[in-house]
Length: 324
Length: 260
Ligand SMILES: Cc1cc2nc3c(=O)[nH]c(=O)nc-3n(C[C@H](O)[C@H](O)[C@H](O)COP(=O)(O)OP(=O)(O)OC[C@H]3O[C@@H](n4cnc5c(N)ncnc54)[C@H](O)[C@@H]3O)c2cc1C
Ligand SMILES: Nc1ncnc2c1ncn2[C@@H]1O[C@H](COP(=O)(O)O)[C@@H](O)[C@H]1O
Image (cartoon, rainbow over all chains, first blue to last red; front, side):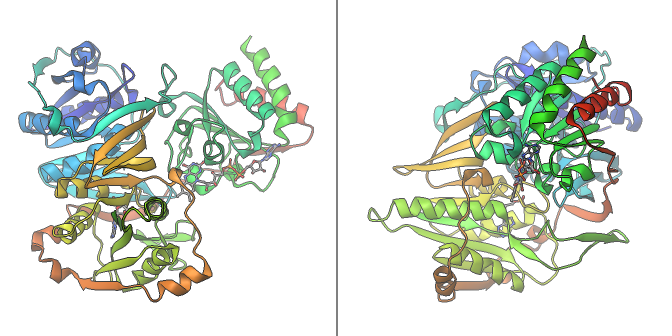
């Protein structure tokens, strides 16, 4: 009997759905293989999230609570994670693949001498480790990987598994934590452009993504209106974040975020491989582009060849009618 | 101000690839300087130029890789880096991030520097692990996914793209940072730069000179094979009167795809 541990990521006062996806899957794996699925919450208000995590069936929930965890800073987080690993002795420790995770995963693996695979899209336990699938070459190809050893760390792409609740009365274990000012060598000075209450793109159900074709005011207005009719989140290609037209946190792709919505509408986006790397696993892809040869049409379920300034106004009207 | 930039040679992801019996077959052996590392080099060049006059800024690149990676080293030198170390590996070694980090850590053990920069990830594998592993092995304060860098005395001010926004972090030196390509547009080497690069010092050393334990060169992860991603079929493509197209596709999304 070994421990399969899930890190519960919290951002802007809410649990990232992707952590619950990981926990749900590990709980099923634990049931099948006779292991324990446990979870850890590291936050300034960790105990506030215990009830919600319990609903996803963790048999034990570790909490590490300290004001220092109000914002992401890597030194205290690493210290807490090392403490948790000492205590829980997990055979597998799984994280949702957030920017926070990306910041610490390598360092934690080095610190714990653990095998590590980042950003996997599927995984399963084997006798002496795990097997995992990772998209590579800008997500054009899938690589099959093995990690061996008795301590394995992974991060999991959002949308790889379903989050499904299953009640359990998991025991709560609070881990004492304190950190000295001078142990935190880095100082967080400020956070710019925090997303506030906007839906995180990597969890959005519907995304309207804006590309270079929409870079003027009218283009932006149409994109915003389309998103509002569909109750969608707005995403962007690099062309628009680079030009400072949309916030950098909205970039989708190899450098930006990986998304997997039910509906993805690419407006004035050519479909460069680095962009597609972040959105190819969307369920339904719609592309609006005036160039019939644009590569985005190779992966779109519904392609509209046309000028977005002419297509979007009637498209928005029709969607309004349908919604009514 | 002394910058070390860890640069990696990676296969060009734009070159066509095929899979035969689980192996990745590249139609061309085209390789490139990892784009994120090019951004790291660019930023170090800008920061050391700014500091010119105050003290001697120096940018040195370090690469772990086979013989033919010398081309990638030349590219960084042609951009403007002052010198390079090439830690040579045998032809077809398949190391994971952890082994590269251990090799780099042994190299840096007795070096002096203000900043070590890495790319935020390798363009081919998107692993994103080496940088923070190296920071841990060297016990350096670090930040990843930098989209902006500034020097302030001997502190490095890093703006990193985080989950909730852009985090501005002050790191005391010496420190390590991993760079996003959202930080800058790497310069294209000029003819003069290319000519000069040929005269710049490149020190080539073998792994054996780093006195590593045999175990440190054993990977804990392996790639056992590759497969095609289930191909996304191109769906229906419509051309014609914009108004009609808009109506048609909106209807299909509602009634066929069921996503409205
Ligand atoms: C290492 C690396 C990482 C990268 N990471 C990312 C990433 O994470 N995300 C990302 O997006 N990019 C990324 N890129 C950049 C990527 O290669 C492309 O440059 C970028 O995606 C292009 O954005 P775009 O499609 O908006 O612009 P373009 O390629 O310029 O395409 C604009 C499209 O709009 C169409 N258009 C123009 N006007 C109209 C109109 N009136 N009506 C309809 N259509 C119109 C055009 O036909 C064209 O197809 C990366 C590049 C590198 C090297
Ligand atoms: N063989 C190598 N030689 C030099 N730097 C490397 C090497 N491998 C990885 N790196 C550094 O680590 C970053 C990528 O880490 P990763 O995504 O874990 O492969 C690169 O951008 C480099 O800065």
